Image 1 (cartoon, rainbow, N blue to C red):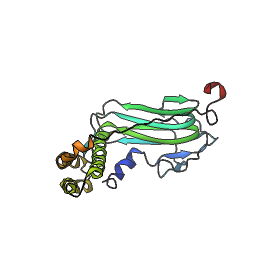
Image 2: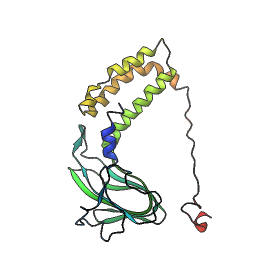
Image 3: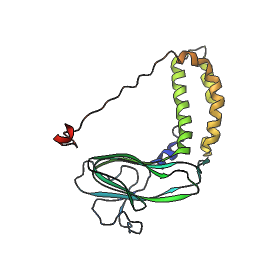
Image 4: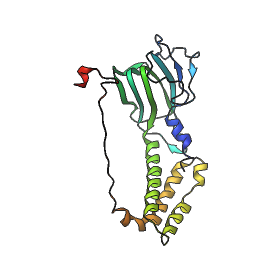
Length: 231
């Protein structure tokens, strides 16, 4: 299942940014000519970690009306950027975020997508660009259902035994796996509802388990923050 989902995860990561490792004037403008910039083959290619030079990436990002048979009309669309260091993020020539130490921001693009649309994203930074991706609410709803079911299968396998493991096999067989090959994710999600019927005998056992979420944080005096900010 996860292998079949790779194309949609790749789209979320915004492949094929164009990239420059120079501080170029007006690189945030729509009519700027970036034809001589380097091509990035994936989200992290060509990025130097901890760079002391000012660098740029640019990309026209297209949001279609549908993808993998998922209707995107009415979707909320956001651009997420995470970088360590000084940075600026532009959308359609508008400066959306500017920070001295780090950016970890989801930038609203469309509150409700009305039609196939595109926008220009440009990111300027000095430091480390960790990642940037696109978030589309209707896609996320479908992925959430699929990823949740995968985890349900895992925990049911954990509590199963030789007398009831056939229920897990039946759940897997009931999935419309051919719809993944046909790029019809909604049809696959619909089949998950039927598959959950076969997992229902495990639910009482699963409820006896606890999940512990343990957080970790740190301060960065030796990395990004100076003495005054740390204190």
